[in-house]
Image (tube, rainbow over all chains, first blue to last red; front, side, top):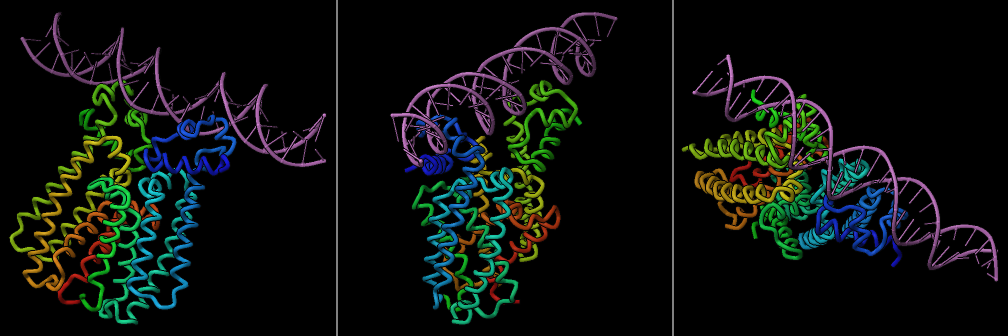
Length: 196
Length: 196
DNA sequence: ATTTTTTTAGGACAATTGTTCTAAATTTGA
DNA sequence: TCAAATTTAGAACAATTGTCCTAAAAAAAT
């Protein structure tokens, strides 16, 4: 693996385990056994490392979204599977979500890109809900704006379940993903047309 | 106002507007026109300022909760009013919620206290839901664990709507409170026994 | 084989931060 | 009033951080 890739890998590990504020370029270099000078040859600004990691996350997100878009017959199972994939991705890049506000203050372009991503995801979710309504899986007696409100709830829960976990029960790894995926699925329960 | 109170007031303003990481004890002192030495006479560690501000928040929260507990006849209106009060309080101490994970890493005792507060709030919410179910306002056809899941969603949205706002639409002040109070109310919509 | 390019180590610097110390000023209490 | 306390300003220190610079080493190209 070349040095640049190795820096990103090591940075991700350190950011995830120590938090974005506790990790400096010197720490990353030390953990890799290279000099800080060398690290800054590959990334002149430390922020470029964070920026690049965010881009990796966004790219992997787009992959999941493209997969869902290619589905012809949307079902609750497929939807749920997409959710779990997303939650696993969020966990992989958890430092970003655990420090999202700080990062967006430090690197404003990340906020800008994230906002655009969010807007794309919004229309996609609304389309999926329409499909599920048409198939009689979701209720048909709710007003239009209930679905828009639902999308906002979804984003808040999806982006900050990790923070909630950190502040409360502190489940580790797969357990956290499993638990909060279930909470996430629970959001949709009262929207089902037929209570199972 | 004595110096100690003034420090807390100024710190809250600065933390809210610049973020907890960008503000140092020197900044607070400078804004007040006192020396850093003086500030540290009143608060030996800067973290004590944050800790004290958290305690103020928790105390005001308890006040709202006590008010709700004293209600004999729970209704959706009263519940909603309590929510708006909470959202206004959260906005008042917004730096805490915008940097909750960082703060809890810096000052672990805050995390511990917050967790305890959360657990108290959980039982309280479940009791309110029981009352609303008994009165025929909330649905009766949902399984037990649906309500526990709902409480988790509620906490995530209540604690991180500000972060979501910061990352996306960036509403200011009262507008943010108004908008997200409405999103919050929307959570309960599909739980109502009768769609209005 | 030798020149050119890329990569690396290590030192250096300026800025910042939290905190402490000392001495002066101010307030309080007897 | 005047001694004791509290409060304040300002200097000082050690640690850390991001970034840059220089020169050597390694790799690639010719």
